[in-house]
Image (cartoon, rainbow, N blue to C red; front, side, top):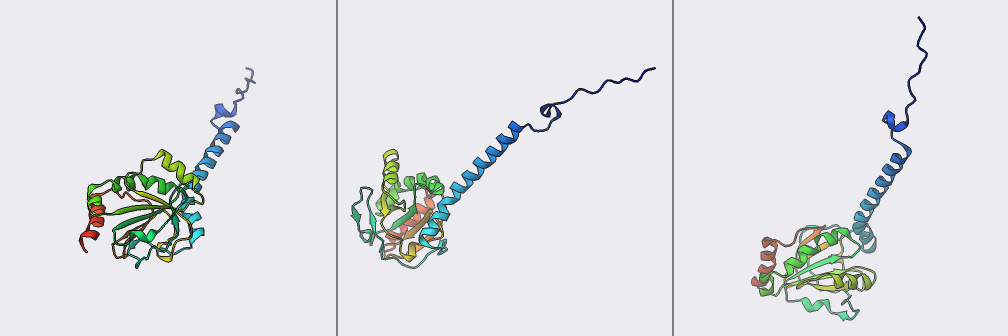
Length: 204
């Protein structure tokens, strides 16, 4: 009886279950895209840290402010930030290139529309640290900002507004005391935060 000399058919990489060169390339490209997205997300913190230093902050208050920060409106006209003295203020530091800033922006806009804030004369002030007016103007052209007021930094912030990253938000009473400071994106449109801001004006 003769021995069967036939051989098993040769299998291609796809048939054997091993990834093809195309699949490997696609996997590498997906990994690069993921890493780039993570880098952009982190950029909102890293770039601002390089600009203003690394004073950590969050949670509790951070002293007082005289609002000694040079700012302009979106058209470039100077604005006296000290004009907010005597009012409860939520001051948010943000930038159009900062994904976490854009993530929390709708909640800040919604908060600004709450009637209890209007009744207490609370100012929701959004200070951009973009390096030019153009991206801020483009943002405003496509966004209804409600009752919030958008300004653009024309200098580095004073020490009390310097943080380890953005977004950074400060709740300030009419006497300029920084009652609360938060670094990082949050949902600001809550009854508790609205009541806290409104209480600043009632406490005078």
